[in-house]
Length: 194
Image (tube, rainbow, N blue to C red; front, side, top):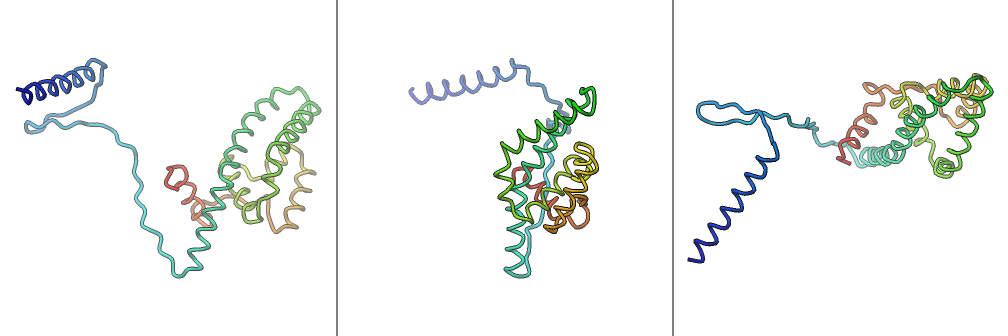
């Protein structure tokens, strides 16, 4: 008797759960093929990549270092793109060049106070990756951004300083060529795989 009561209670709970899902309006497309109902639904894209094979330990170490560096600077490139959109709207609303310069000085000071210490601690290779990822996120090289926001002379000075440290603000992002490994790592980060 207890067994029958338990089965009856479970079936009522399962049936009640099914009815509650139906009453919530869950609608799916389905086809009946040869008496069998097949649900039609869009699934998220799945990317299948083969496991990385390295010729030697040194190559694996270099790749792991690249992963670590990209993971460190990728959030900054996204932040740069978001802030560029934010300040671009503000700059377009400014009436003259003097007001634009004042806005840019204020924004630069605010950003430097907030992120300056973290950016100072970056290595040269992280800086190069950041320059390339900023180009990826914004569609403009760092040189072009500085030139648009601060002027040609400032961009020339910044490029000169960057060249002293073997960096190039004019470096563009090429996701099919030399920057393919960085692009692969960024895609893995965006998917949450690493």
